[in-house]
Length: 99
Image (cartoon, rainbow, N blue to C red; front, side):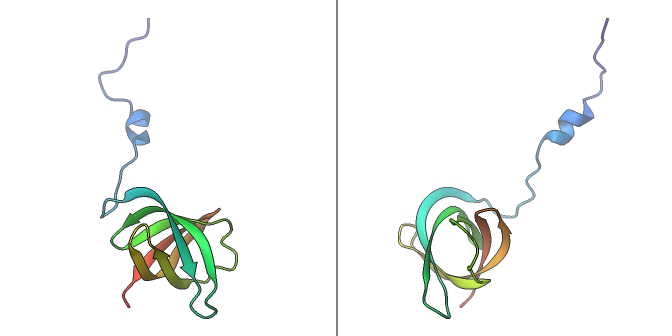
């Protein structure tokens, strides 16, 4: 007959994600625009998570999006210069830059 051990299962304990983020992110889905600084071109996107130092945004394709741009959203009352921190699939992580 099987008897469970008195010690906790290490696999189960290690499977619990640990959140090491410094700031709480606010999940949302708000329309936004990426404004390319050099050309004035605008690209539609969606804000997914936002915090005081950056955001996660979704785009149709991140091809042609420069490393720095102006991120605008009337719905989120946001207009700031941003730099791409990471790119995965159709999502970008951006850091807000001080102007």
